[in-house]
Image 1 (cartoon, rainbow, N blue to C red):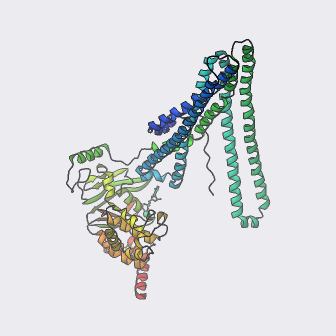
Image 2: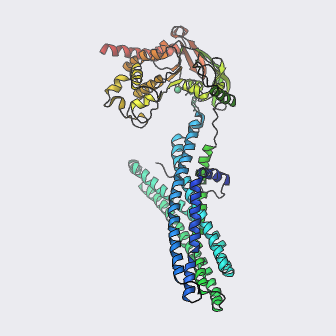
Image 3: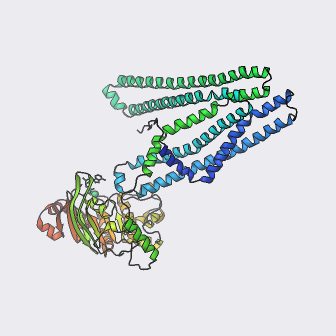
Length: 618
Ligand SMILES: Nc1ncnc2c1ncn2[C@@H]1O[C@H](COP(=O)(O)OP(=O)(O)OP(=O)(O)O)[C@@H](O)[C@H]1O
Ligand SMILES: [Mg+2]
C-alpha cells in the first residue's frame, strides 16, 4: 500500500530556489501586472473603508459643514464597486497565472526529462518521479499565484492603513501599529506549529489506514498465528498517538485565536481610552476615533494570510527542490560545441546535398566500430573491457550469451544512450561524439526486448516511425514483418485502440508492431533485442522471412535467442562478462565446441524438435 508521503518542513527559506520558480511567473508579465494592480487596488479600497463612516459621524455631529451625508454614502458606493471590480480581476488573474505557471513548469520538466540520458533514469524510479512531479508542479504554481497575491494584498493593505492612520492622527496610529510586530511573531509561530501538528495527524492517520489494510489482507495468517490480541494492542497504541496528535493540533488552533484576538482588542482598548480622552478634550473628532477602532481590528487578517504563505513556502520547499533539481540537471550526453557549430554552419549553407547529414558529414553509414571501448554503470564494476568490433554495411551481427553478459549494454552504447568511458565508437571511422546525436539516433530502428507502444491505434503506433507514411506504407511494413494477419483479425483492424502502453496486445504482438514501426522509418542501422519466448514458433518462421528483408543493405545488431535469427547472421558473437568470448559464423563456432556449441546442442535442439513437430502437425 502506498502511504501518503509527507515532506519535512524546511526552517530556512531558500531564496534562490523561489526566485527560480517565481521566474516562471515573470514570463507572464501582463497577467502579473494585472494581478499586482488588482491586489493593490483592493488593499487601498479596504484601507479606505472606515473613512466614509468617519465622515458620516462627523456630519451627524455637525462637525463637517462643507458636505452632507450624500458624500460619505457616495464614497461608500464607489469603494464597494471598486472592491468588486478588484476582486473580479484578482481571482481571474490569479487563476490564469496559476494555470500558466503550472503549465510552464511542467513543460520545462517534461522537456528536461526527454533530454536526460538513460543513466539519469537508472537512479530514479520513473513512476514515482512522474507522479511526484505533476503534484509538485501543481502545488508550486498555486503557491506562486495565490501566495504572491496574498503577500501583495497583505502588505499593500497594512501599508495603506498605516498611511491613512498616520494622516488622520499619528499618535493613535502609533498605538495601533504597535500591535503589528507581536501579531506577526505570534502568527508565524502558531502557523508553523499548526502545520507541524496537522502533519502529525495525517501521518498517524496514514499509519492506521496501512495497519487496517494489512490486518484485512492478512486475516488468515493472523488467525493461524493467534495474533489477534497483539494486533489489537498495536492498533490501540496507534489510536492513542493519533489522539494526542489531534489534541495537540486542536490546542494550538484554540490558543492561537484568543491570543491574536486579545492583541487586537488591547490595541482597540488603548485607542478607546486614549482616543476617548482626546475626543472629550475635543482634540479629535468622534468619527476619527471610530475609524481607529475599526483599524485596530483589521490587522489580523492580512498578517494571518502572509504568515500562511510563509509556512506554505517552507512546507513546499522540498517540492521546489525536486522540481528545480530536475530543471537544473544538465543532460550529459549532448552535442559538443563543435558539433553544434557544424550543424549551424551546415544549415546556414543551405546545402541540398542529400548525401550529407545535418552535421555536414556523410549521411551513409558504411561501418560502425567499437575501438577499445570500456564501460561501467557503477564505478569499479566494469561491464565492457576494451571491447573491439567492426561491422560493415549489409552485415548482421547476432549477439548471444548468458544473461547479464552485456549484450543489451553493447547496443545501448551503440545507440549512444550511454557513452563509453574509455575508447571510442566510430562511425565511418569518426568518433560518434563528433556526429549529431539527433541524426545518429534518427538512423536507428530499435525493437526492444520489452517493446513500448503508446496508447492510440495500431496505425498511429506504426506511423510514429515515420509521420509522413501513408496508410499503404503502414500496411506494407506490417505485411513485411508478418503483423498484417494478426492485425486484420482484430475487430477494428489497424484502427484498434491498443490501450495504455499497448496493454491489450500480447508481448509478441507488441514486438511485431514495434518491428513495423522501426521498419517504416527506413533506418540505416537496425537493432533488435529479441523477445525470448513471447513469439510462438510458427510466428517466428513468419518473422524470419520478414527479417531477412529488413536486414538487407543495413547494419543489423540482433540480440538473438532464436536459432533462425542466429544462423542467418554474418557474425555471431558470444558475449560473456562484457567480452567477446567467441566470434565467427555458425559452422566455425560449432567446430570450436565452446559455449556456442553447448548452447546450440541444449537449447536450440529442443527448439528444432518443436519446429518439426509443429510443422508435421499442420
Ligand atoms: N541500468 C543499469 N544500471 C546498472 N547496472 C546495469 C544496468 N543495466 C544493466 N546492468 C548490469 O550490467 C550487466 C550487463 O547487463 P545487460 O543488460 O547488458 O546484459 P544482457 O547480456 O543484455 O542480459 P539479458 O540476456 O538478461 O538481457 C548486468 O550485470 C546488469 O546487472
Ligand atoms: Mg538484455
